[in-house]
Amino acid sequence: MNLRHLRCFIAVAEELHFGRAARRLHIEQSPLSRTIRQLEADLGVTLLDRSPRSVRLTLAGQVFLEDARRVLLAFEQAQTKARAAANHRNTLRIALSGDMGQARLSALLALCREEAPRVGIRLFEAPLAQLVSGLRNDLYDAGFALAAEVDSGVVATPVWRDPLVVALPARHPLLAFKEVPLEEVASYPLVLCDPQVCEGCSRQRERLFRTVNVQPTVAEYVSTHSLMLALVAAGYGVGFSSAAHLAGCHQADVVVRPLGDETASLTTYLLRPEGEVMEPLRQFIDRVERVGRPQGADQRLM
Image (tube, rainbow, N blue to C red):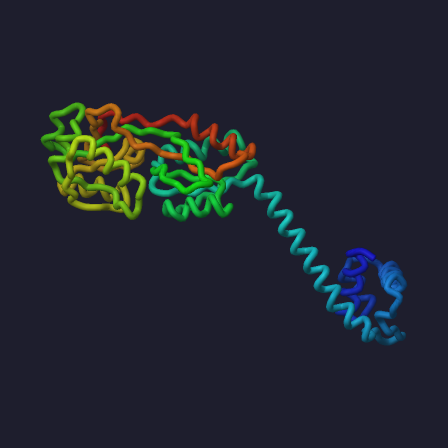
């Protein structure tokens, strides 16, 4: 007895007609009848009462039909799960915590499509705590975050360091500097990314200002860099972020200048579960490291 016997029996039991069951299975009626007789012989019971005008299930047939359906359903579910697991090897689940910078993310995805077109990439946006939890529970294969404070079982590796820059409205006094000192930046109200939106960025920013013993004044917290630049252009304050994050934004009458401290940068970390790194993920990490970082040169956003 095998799955073919079960499928044939279920079809006959549901149709109660050998001809209709044969058409449903796309086979001839004679081999279908032989298959049912073989099944009954293997079981040692009669499953169907046959007459020239009708087919009926015996009591044994009714009982066997219920179990046959469960067995076939269990097999189909197991088959689906096995295929899904096999396909999962060809898909990387990448979580993003905070803004990774549109230009770099686009470059990374384009490189992956070029070099590994058969490996799919699914992106998920998640807060830092959810990202770390997802890595530990096999919901994600890797993730990007602007923080390295993670739990045991997760590895955080610095992959990108971007120079920090300031976004200034046209004719702002700080435009007198080609490279703006951090102390001077802190003397003006700032427009910053919301700590609840980008927790890691906020942590790194706070550490930077502590190095010069300055507590900045915050004019506004924003959820996007586009809104940051709009407020800067309107004169609400000075924008403060990285070159990579501002590279994809466009706003008239806003000028970006680098900080005077060349070591002032924002670090992006790649997070992954501890343990062996499978080949698709290893190749993905290699591409991450090869993606060039945007430059923080003096430029007008238009």
